[in-house]
Amino acid sequence: MSALDLNFEDAEQIVKLLQQGKVGVMPTDTIYGLVGSALNPQAVEEIYLLRKRDSSKPMIILISSLEDLLDFDIVLTNQQKEFLNKIWPNPVSVILPCPFDRFFYLHRGKKSLAFRMPDNKNLLKILQKTGSLVAPSANIEKQKPAETIEEAKGYFNDQVAFYADEGQLKSIPSTIIRLYEDGTKIVLREGSYKV
Image 1: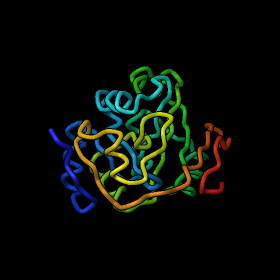
Image 2: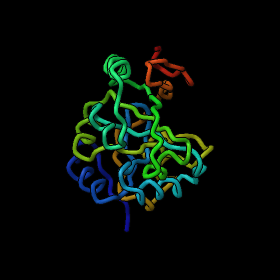
Image 3: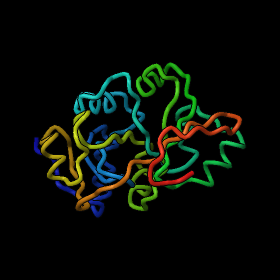
C-alpha cells in the first residue's frame, strides 16, 4: 500500500493512523522524525527495523505533559518537577531512570529513557491525542537526517503509512541532559538550548 501524503492540517488522520499502531514521518520540533506510539512495542520494533538502528540504543520519546511520564511508571521528585517545568517545552531531551522490565523494549537494558516536550503547538496537539511517540530522526542509521519529505521518501518509500510535509526542516539537535532524583543535572550534549 502506498504511503499517504499529509500535513499538520490532516491532524485527525495522523492521530488515527498512530493510534492504530502505524508508523510515519512527520515534523518534530527539531527535524523530521520517524514516529510511532511509544506504548506499542510492535511500532517501536518496526522503527528499529526501518532505520536499521542499533537495537541496543534507546530512542527519544516525545510527550505532551509531565503526566505522560506516569505511563512509564516514572514518578518525579519535586526537584525534578521544578526543573522540567522550567525548561519544557523546548528542544531539550531529558534522561530519567526507568528500571522496569516491562519497558525493556524501550530502554533496551539501559534502565533509563530520554523524553522531550516539543515546543511546537501542532505537534503537542497531536501528542495530546496519541499519547507519547518515539521519534528518532527520519533516516537510516549513520546517514544524513532527512530535511525534506523527498529525502525521507528516499529512505523509506512506501514502508511507512504516511508522510506529513512541512517544507524543509533544518535544525540543531536537541540538548540532552541526564536528570537524577536529587535534581542533579549532567549535560551530555549541548544543542540549541543552553541550560
